[in-house]
Image (cartoon, rainbow, N blue to C red):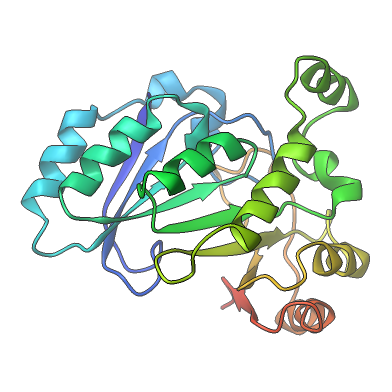
Length: 246
């Protein structure tokens, strides 16, 4: 398991908690707007922390922190993930997992073993345009399907699991979409709204360009345009909100 980043204190990554964030390298998607290019392309070159270093630091900070966010990359590509999270839970922390939803089996296992308390799952686009926005070519899609890696069905399975098979008294989730001018329009949110209708909460995140974006040159929408997209979604998901706006 490649641990490529560690934010020792954050007030943003785990809602309502002072937390630390652990970033695992590697991902099965190539979203062109991804902000963590190094974690996708050369994760081994950026593996800066050992598991024990993370655990030792968390133990020292247990009086100040209440949660740990495990992010990426895509954390669920690692079979070692449950053991790592179990060690974090044994230190008394709540755990939030950021995921693209392509591994519903892992998601179920973590939930059933009470290893996660919060999941933030990315919704890249409407189902009809998912792979284009996620940076997966038609050839790659065919290869994944032939090998049994039906990502679209896995993602739909993860959405259904989070919405209909989890206990809200001990667990919560959110869906979120990073909104990119060149990749999303009003029809995107009409399709997403119909797909995840009834979701507990949904966030539209404003895209931000940076030097570490996988494919620079994309653009964000204005606040008024983002609010318009939120209004498209609101009849399906009343609890929709905006993030990342100035």
